[in-house]
Length: 89
Image (tube, helix red, strand yellow):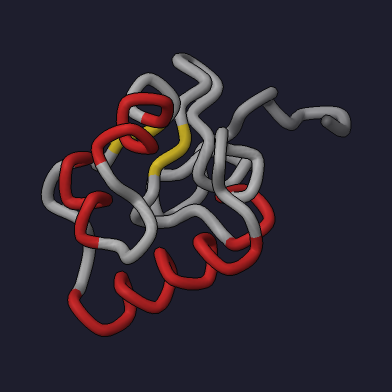
């Protein structure tokens, strides 16, 4: 940060300067994360990241992290690996 700027200063949307990742808990907010940030999650590649964003654009924000299982290719096993890394706000 520059002089007079605070580390992790919140942006108008309520997210931190890191995008969808909250510096406090390190989890990714799947409602605001971009494709590159989603790909940092276990088992999420370009196709699944795009599918998450597409779902979000068509259906609105996820109401609960379990809604991620509505995405094609993300079943119970994938969700179990992801649940500690994600959140919704």
